[in-house]
Structure formats: C-alpha cells, structure tokens
Amino acid sequence: MNFMTNKPYDETSIESITNYAKQLQNKRLIDFVDKKNIKPLGGKGQFGQYLEKYFFGYDINSRKGVDFEHANLELKSGGVVFRKGALVSKERLSIGLINFTDIVSETFYKSTLWNKLKNTLLVYYEFQQAESPLYYKVRVVGIHELSKNDILQIKKDWELIKTKVINGEAHLISGGDTEFLEASTTGSRNQKSIKQPNSEIVAKPRRFALKPRYMSSVLNQMYFNNIILEGEVNMELLDNLIEKLKQYQGKSFEEVSSALYMDTSESNKARFATVTTSMVLNSLSQISPTALESWKKYDYKIKTVRMSKNRYVKESISFPKFDPKMLVKETWETSKLNEYLENTKYLFIFWREEGESFLLDKTVFWNMPAEDILEAKKVWKKTINCLKNNDLDNFPKIKDNRVCHVRPKARNSEDTVRTHHGSEMVKSTFWINANYIRESIYNS
Image 1: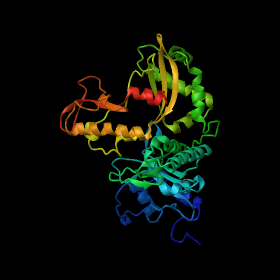
Image 2 (image 1 turned 30 degrees about the horizontal axis):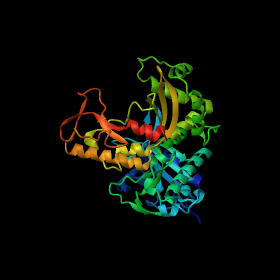
Image 3 (image 1 turned 120 degrees about the vertical axis):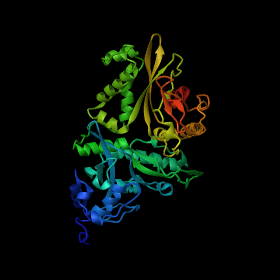
Image 4 (image 1 turned 90 degrees about the horizontal axis):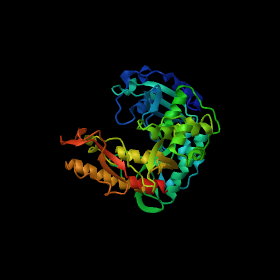
C-alpha cells in the first residue's frame, strides 16, 4: 500500500520521515504551517501536539503503540535551554505509562517500552518563557541511536522495576532506584493509587521516562555531532570507580591532596569537597578516556562526609533553601523535596578523624529507599502545617524524625524570608539527619 498519497513523506520509511523532520533544524513550526488553519491547543506538551497535528499531519494520540505505526517509529519532543554553551534538557523524556499487570509477563526486547524506544525520532526545541510553542526554534532533530552500553543500562533499569512489581513492591518504587530509565510519578495532583499484582497494597501510577541528565548527554552529542567512541567503559563503570578509589583508602587527607597537587590550607573552607571531587575525576581518568563522559550520564551527586574517631557523622546534609510562600502551594507528588529524594543519587565519600588528620574511610553509592522517602514526607507535611498556622517555632526537629528535619540555613539571624502570612522567618531548609547518614548509608 502507498502511504505517501496524503502526506509529504513515506509513512513506511524511517529515512523519509526523518529527512522530512530535519527541515525543522534551526527553524520554527510556524515556518511550515499556515497560521490561519491552526486551532489553539491547550494543556501540557503543546509543542508536541502542534508538531503531530500540523507538521506531520496525524491525529494527536496517546496510543499504546508507536506514533508512525507503518514505519515502527516513535516520535518524542521536548525542550532544552542553553547553559554555559551546552544543552540542558528541561525535563525527563516521558515514554509511557507502566502497566503493572502487563510488565510481569514481558521480556525486555518484546516489551511495550522497547517497542517505543528502539526507533525514536527526537525533535527538541529551545525553550523561551514568553514565546508561543509555534515560535520555538528547533535545535535537535534526529534518530536517538542507543549505544550498546545505554541499552544494557536501560535493560537493567527496566528489569529492576519489573522485579519490584513481581515482588508486590510497586508501592516502594523510587525514581532513584535506577540510572537512565526511571519509573516516575505522573505528577497529577489528583492521581489515584492503583492496584498492583501480588500485593493488596495500592501503588502510585507511574510512567517510564529517561532521566534529564541522560537526555542532556544524548542531545549534546546529537547537537554538536560529537559521538563518543566506544571505549572500555561499560556497565561496570560504577564498580570500576569504587575499585580505583580504593587506592586512596586509608590515606590521610594531606596525602591524598599532595598526590593530586591540591591546596589543603585551612583558609580554603571547601578543601574537603574540592579534593574529594578531584579524587573521583582522577580515578575516572584512570578507567578509560571516555569514562568521564559516561559518568556524566549517571548524574551522581558527590557528597563529602567527615566522621569522628568513633565514626559519628559530624554534620547533617542540607538541601537547597525553600521558599515558604511556594512550599505551602506544593503537593507531595510535585514537591521539590520529593523530586530530590526520588531522583537524586549520591556517591558518599567518608573521611574519618584520626589524630590531627582525616583518613579516607569508605565510599558508598546510595539513593534513598522508598520507605524512608515516606518518612521524609511526614516532615514535609508538618512543615507546611506549621507555615499555614504561622507556627514558626515548631518545625520538625532532628529528634522528631529518623530521616530528616528542618532548621535554618542562613548567613545569620537577620538573613530572613517572608512567609505567605507576611511574617519574617530565618531562611531554612530540609536536612538529612547526621545519625541517619551513619546508620543507613555508612553502615549499609
């Protein structure tokens, strides 16, 4: 059958569809459509809706199968911003809802996810706050060619999610469980929990998505035509990094700093964090020439923790300061704290006090388990109640919750911010408890 009769491309050919799409590179949708024929579209993803309906000429859909069914090709669009000369993906790339019932009997290469991922046409635009989506300039157009290592990691992520569903633990899934592919919450304010197989406990509906940092890496390679050659870096990158870091284990801070030619003077308040980061980057460079670029895809936050001689953590770890006026408007599913805890992964580097110095004691990859995220939710909820009641003296304290607490993060007592009641409070934030770091991370 000839599918070219009504469209300016061959619906059976990936090459034809891609070549047609590449006309958009560095241009705008409005350059290709008649403005008089356009009907305003509402809701999220307006660019994608305009792209489907007015550029490719097919009805907007949310079908289970791929968008160009005769070519077995999926279409995905999204926004980027430029920061320091590089593209940064505005958000995760949503693939589709997870069917908890179906996934338990699927295999990866015959799964709904893989059917959408294996041939994907990406169309990414430069986001402009005050601009209509029709006027966004398209920056990236092309087929997302998954590398062998990317496929292996995504498969591993998918299998971890599937295993949790099989074990009746869909309610314990966390975005931080995985590396490139995540089971993200849908973000709907009124989402209803749904049934899962093998458990009576209902779970949040979730969708498969590729993480923003991973997508930023992919998009930069496409945009700058800088395809990274396959090297020795593979699925064992994180294990290899731990092995390389062992060369510093048991050495003093001064010894490590000297080996890296770093400044260790006490006037440098960030010296521990600076030396720790340099140590990680140096270890990556010893793995392979491409290890650092691969590491960026994993988006681990490096955290430096100092411990006493008796292995007690000296300080709690803070998140960015919150705006009390914005905090009271959040729901848990869309809150910044939930986003941090669900999706942030850490490489913890522990330095233990020994005599007059600190020794490198332990390195741990970690993300917060789902049950602990629920504990943190209690702190978030109480904080909002305190703000709504203008009760600024009773924020959750470190003794109130085993995971986290709220306290000031300010220059001094005069460094304040205004609440929605109009009262002033010292700038504050959520903190992960020092004892929790010791018990749940160091001792894990």
